[in-house]
Each structure stands twice: as structure tokens, then as C-alpha cells.
Image (cartoon, rainbow, N blue to C red; front, top):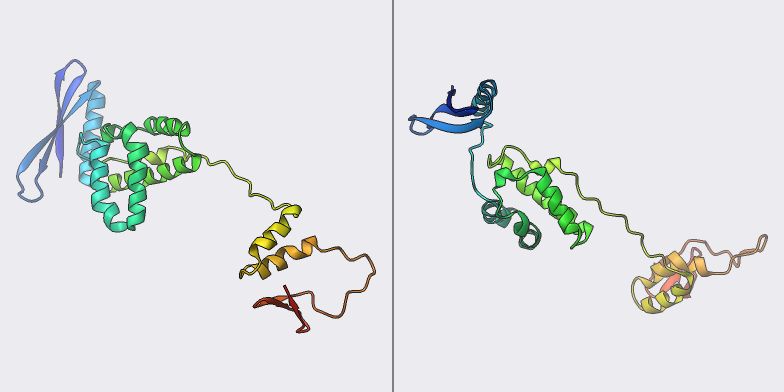
Length: 236
């Protein structure tokens, strides 16, 4: 069971002392934390630290920078858990868009506002979809940091995912269909294009006019010809 107490250092300044035992040697050690505030708040903070340690949720104060953690993450996790191509893409995104802005900052000191500021800066330089990729990557990185007790919680989860504006697909104009047919002629997709678009450009049958022959309306591609429902072949 972890025990602790507070010691006053000055006006509204306290030292929080936690008595712990080394899990391997059993030797007694002390952990010191500084706190600024009144006595009641210092006692509450001390009690919270004791609860975290007893529950296994305690995170050591660490002055390691984000760059230092990213070096370890790329070496120890990305290199063995994703494909080389994906690891290379992760490294590129971090090197180009994250490390220059946040790399030298202490990882435990990074807050949601730091990430919002990063995304706003990137918005002036790169596409929204790339910013979203950066956000997803950081969510994974900080998720691992929390799991490994390098930080208390995944701060990226507190930040809204960057929005990607919808893009409209280009619509093929009627005048462009013959050009597409000419480009696809002789390729395996040509019969499919004829079936999908050919009927859109064919003259419409007037009301009451009989259908030509008794061929089925459904067609199946067969090599360089189309086979009608009555097994008649039509070259294309």
C-alpha cells in the first residue's frame, strides 16, 4: 500500500512525498512532487497520486520531448507492426508536419490547444485530407503513449477531427462518350462501357413502335462481341 504526506515549503508551496517500494528489490523509495496552492488542495492532490499508484495508473513525471518519444515509437512499434511502406509514410508525415512544430515540446506538456494550433497552421499549407491523416496518426501515437504510461491520457482524443470538404465526381458529358468509346475500343472494358452507356446515347423508341426482332433486352459480353438473349451475336 502506497503512503504519502505533504510538507510546506513556503507560502502556498508544498512538497508531496510518496513512500513506495521497489517492486524488484523491495527497497523503500520516495517520490517527490511539487504543488502550488492551499493546504486542502495539496492534500487532495496527494490523495489522488496515492490512488493512481495503487491502481497502476500513475505516470512518472518525464521531461522527454515529443521527438524523443517519436524516435522510440518509430523504432520499436512502427518498424515491426506495419508494412515498410506504411512506416515510411508515417515517418514522412511526422517529419514534415509534426516534428517541426511540436517535436521539441515536452510530450507530457502538449495540450489540445497545441494540436488545434498545429492543424490551423497546416491548413494554410496542405490539403484537408492530409491534415486528417496527420490527426489519425497522432491519435495512434498518443494512444500508445498513454498505454505505455508515458502520458496520463490521449490528448488527441480531445481534439475534433479535421473536416474534409466533400468533392463532386466529374460527370461525363454526352459529347464525351464517343471519345471514351474510341479510347476503350479493343480493351476488355469496352463491352462494359457499351452496356453501361450505350443505351443512353441510342435514339429512344417512339411510343407504340414495335421492338426490332425478339432479342432480349439483356446482353452479356463474350470476347469481342455481344451475345443477345436469343444467342445472336453482334460485333462491337
